Image (tube, rainbow, N blue to C red):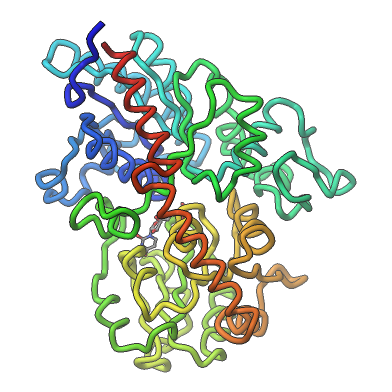
Length: 463
Ligand code: UDP
């Protein structure tokens, strides 16, 4: 039987509506488009109102919307997380169904729903219409496997201090603090915890499972998890902009869909700095530090004597000590939101002081930047462990008894990465991972082959 022509295979991409999920799924959509498929990226109505109209006009992919039940204010419109997730599922399933129906009698009906694994109800919609369903896991394979073990009772919950260290095939021995926080902080964020476990509620019915990592980075855990999962895992990452990897797409230097107001002056500021001299500090799109912690961070950064670029989102800016920016003068740039991959790729970059979100972690690895990790919650605690002990590209801060990471600890960790033999070794390791990441996505690499396999199977299934 004849295969459907590539560009008539229509893939509807549904990310969980947050920056850390939109970025990798949008990048992956671009890659599918470069392989000849026709992706439509569906954000929520609320997010679509904040999108740069140029993105809609100039992109290779199409955009559409579903509802999260909070069309006016997004997440902030809901009473709390529980309320948001209930609304997202109810309105999301209904409007996703409507979207599939909308395209049904057009020249481009939906052939495949590529859904964020956080949204297992999207697979139910795909099954209801008999179309291909592909799960996309945006977090590290290690973290997915820990959740899998928790979901399947291999890891008994609640995990207590008497159970440590915890042995999971393919992973280093884990202490409690190395587990994703939803597991080790008993009862924290029960609805998020339910959501991350529910990724596995129906995934065995998916036609494909894609994971945003690359094989050599997480080889052992990918192999362990592949043994117990059907369909088999396909590592397809890293999904960072292609100019840093295989230059597949011209001008693909950074993520296109920023949920925060972008300050592009940072790259100009970096050009005035010497190579390898700057510390870049960011806690991603969600973390909120206490005022006390922000004070310690500011003082610790000052104590290092290094220049630094510090992303402080508008909602956090009041926590920066009064007059701190003026006190630092040209030594520091404090910005609301910056083009992170472009900044990490800059030759002035010396070290990334990060919360250890998976995108930030894999971006730093792929751009050869060593890290200091100060995890806050969710998967960041596990990422921090892997950065320090498995990939050996950084150090993790120690939290004091008062729950605060002190200025001296912050200074000491940054010095370890920026100076001396240990720092040099971490930089060399980071460059080694960069090479392997490029190898994975270039033609014939492990991720590239998996993407090609995915594309050709979709073509066959959608014939
Ligand atoms: N990011 C960015 N500009 C910033 C800070 C972050 O573009 O000023 C991007 C970063 O490159 C990453 C994403 O936002 O792709 C954050 O995702 P991550 O998983 O690291 O953390 P989360 O925000 O989900 O906690």
